[in-house]
Length: 79
Image (cartoon, rainbow, N blue to C red; front, side):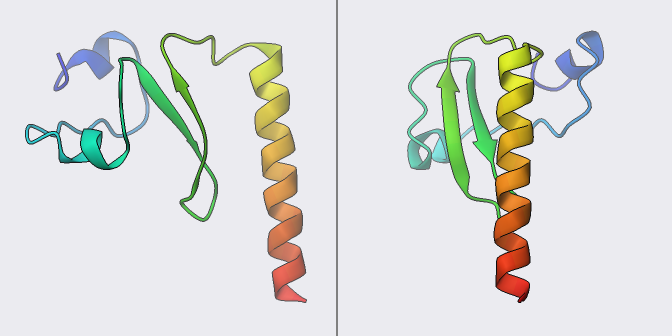
């Protein structure tokens, strides 16, 4: 249920429904679930097709690395 499933699974981020499939087409979604990793500038820097353990130590390390990398890039732009 795209409108109410977030309550069942305790999800704390926006969930949108696209009845026209416009988003699916422009982001080339080929399966479900389909997840994106988006940087602080709104750019897609990774994607995963299928189920994935987003609480794994590997993902936590990857996110920390990406945040550190993005933070250093932002600092370079400011100088």
